[in-house]
Image (cartoon, rainbow over all chains, first blue to last red):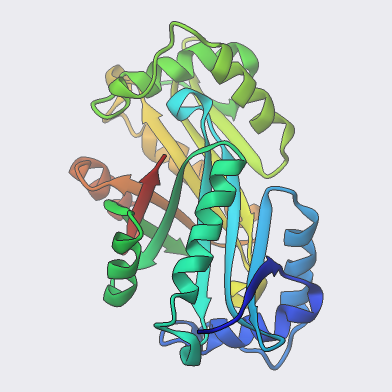
Length: 150
Length: 150
């Protein structure tokens, strides 16, 4: 049994979070922990916004999992809030332990607590294991996610 | 040739926007313009947040198209901002006029202007016409969109 806690990320966690973002088949080409400056600037912006929650799972004093929850207001569905989950990562040596599911349940519960009507996320079509994981948690793959990169 | 302008939505536009949300195969069961109170509360929250932009296309003095753009900070991709587009609607009698494409180009340009590295959106898998529309605009259907409703 693994002992861990889920908490709001602090500035000191940014290096470990970026390491998790980069240690990934898709993220390896996109992120690089050798220069943390742009990441720390982004962290300060996230941390100052009450509708953004960047969280980490800490085990043995180290962040081993992370996700970002964004609360988005909208008119649709009678003016419902929605919780959006981005950048879900669990360090390779902690996968399969139930820690990822606990982290997702935390985000779902926090979204409910803030009055959201739903939680949403997108996942690259190539991440089939992740898709099974989200479906086990009760998510429905009802949408196609489009991106346009500049 | 249709003459129209794109501008930030005002409180007086909320009724027309909700009418567009409800006048839709999927939205008809979810939205109802007969009681605007919850929508006006949501509008006030959106309007007060500098990272939320609810816009309308106005033609002949009436809103005939709408979308919401949300600017989301994150650590991934060297601390990139992303523009997220939600609740895209064009009134039935204005479809096929190029107005929807102009509205989307507005949102893409505004996201660039604010320094975003990408724009993203999700669309119900049943909206195949919309998917072709987004692909013509340059979007890639690279992701699966998951939702969990409460």
